[in-house]
Image 1 (tube, rainbow, N blue to C red):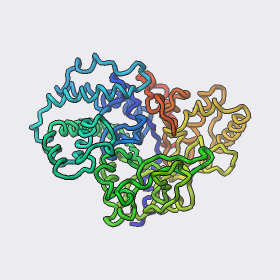
Image 2: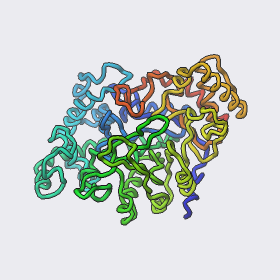
Image 3: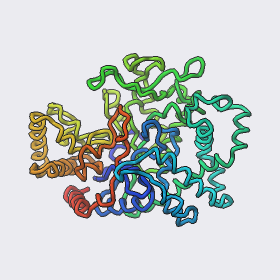
Image 4: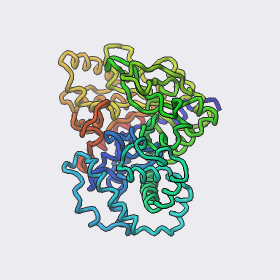
Length: 507
């Protein structure tokens, strides 16, 4: 099959909501896979939404970011729902209801999640029947065995990075490590148990979503963290190394209008030539696995498959990096027909455009990027083609309301002039009596556009302000990744409004 046949294979007009699991309502300080998630699916169905986009389900790492995880395929045990474990007889309500999970129902306290979640789950593990056939089959499959050993060792070394562990654990080889695994079987199985519980709850939730006509889009960070299972165990097979098997190059982006020094992300970069020798098997398996969890997968920083920016590990700034070739479309040719959305934002050149054309994957169009004064700006809704996914903004952008309210008067006047023209062209009512009206006009404009898929962050549906921003890139803050919704936020009126838009614009 030619790669471009992927294009528009899924071209039914659809709309959906971007909502991290962490932001769902729950009684335990963070969104879970329990009642709050099921209620949200019901709300999506009532609103005529066909897609629920989540952020990575990976365990959070540095700065509480799901994009800096200790494993590329593990699952965030913070999301396991305790009430469901009570129903299974694995917990009693007193095991967790007396604990304080957060001082603010609108914010996740990751410190308390870290301190308390595993202790409660260990109580569930102590009551769990480990003789049952399903569990034994899960262990034999061994999918999360590396993650479990890694987490057990993280605990042993007080959560220090693996690069600070002592031998034989640091080098991940030898009989000393084998002996550790044999002697710590119970703790290692506990970490596998967290994955077992998550999968059980996730698969039930996804089945329920499908019954309601809702598909789930997942999110895959392209890079892994330096302190991760992959760099610990597979660095020789996967990453750019120096003569002493140390990571030699790091990911980032060059200087631009936003940063004089560029951005030095620090993630290890892949050795694509080495990966090519076995047909990119690690990537094939990673994407195949993601598609067992999700119906569609968005891949972050997709441009790195064409060319990626690599910075020497000892560099002081990202200025010292250079562009190197990635695998380009060859990587995806070995995978056949897969449902992928390409995050094609940032520095986009002809090579990236050619890659998108060859794969046929839809790219992303971000409304808040459209207002630079260029009448041909590709993010203006009137410029969208069918094979794209349109957003008001992403998890990294300010909320739509704050984006508008923080404009200078002249800037806002120019913005509203262009927005009015866009609405007139699309025959969409442009109402500016209130900021809520303006946000509704923008969402309506995206629904009216040619884009096959429209996804709107929940905070923009509700016209929330800066307080609801999910992440500010290149910052570490208690505000990042912590915002949550309450059950009262999901009203019938908003659902009815969205439902009317799906009917009017055939979504």
